[in-house]
Image 1 (tube, one colour):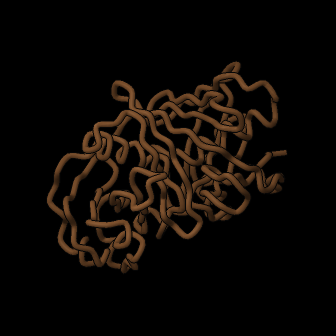
Image 2: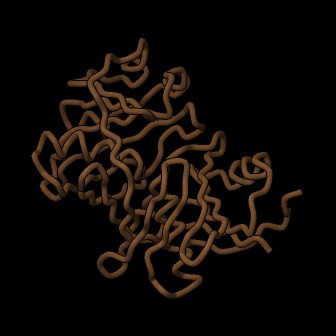
Length: 265
């Protein structure tokens, strides 16, 4: 039996936040099987876990199209499922392409992830990217994964209707679009588009906040900032900056549990 669950991450209520698949394995199968399962689950990411020793796991993430090097919401979902299965809410270590990440109990019902900061540096927008977004940028940055585009207002972020076919030609994982929040409950808003990775718009993107935390933290002179990802589902991410790391806090809700009937070869 191969357990698999769907979890809404960075969510305070069901059917909000960002849904992720979580698949628990006892060993690594061929990559092709992982890709086929992620395509079948057809969520922005499916997390696959293999245990190492007590509270330590190897973790990989796949979109319906590609493997990615860092994913926040599917890591949050993974910690949530592991705690549901084993009850004890101890610190969990995840060994990933981005190094060792941890998940810790935070305030009641919340999980805190320890991730690497991924700051963006000023960059020139590649040809056609802003036209594909339908946006006029205040500033553009780039980190190892994504482009970041700052817009003049939250209203402009929310109003974007990108041409995803054209945006997919941008040579990066995805494009983060952001602005200061018009709501005093949040410091900034964002959206994340990754058609090249098979995800036109991601509902709530933890890894993007590893970049956004540095972008807005430096400008607002804050170590703790709150972002709202203004997708159709929406989600809140609380970020604390700490010596080249970021702490991402959020909640998760299990939506379904089941098992895969097609085992690896």
